[in-house]
Image 1: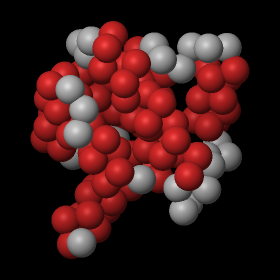
Image 2: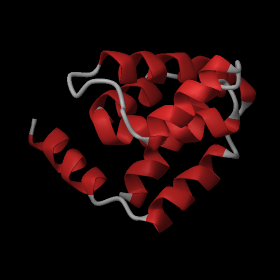
Image 3: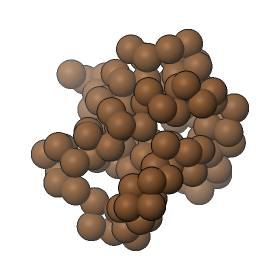
Image 4: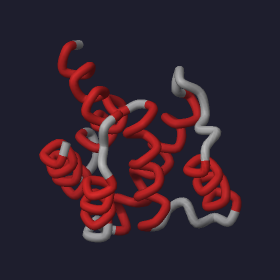
Length: 113
């Protein structure tokens, strides 16, 4: 439980530089990983205790979903950004239980935080 608390504290202070590095990491992820991870991250955002995002980020995610563009590199970038804000422990659980690309991504994101 203490580990989760530490992750949440680090995520609250995520910088634009860290966010850019995460976005860059996502560009190297396979199409299969994107197709597997994006729906799970969206469900997490929608079902989180903190509620759906009512921010510009939430609007971007809604727009991508509405236009069937959520399962893209940009969609994954925005979903990761959102889940880092509302449910970071769940995001890491999803990534670590997915394919090798997702596991590597989780490890690298943890290293950035």
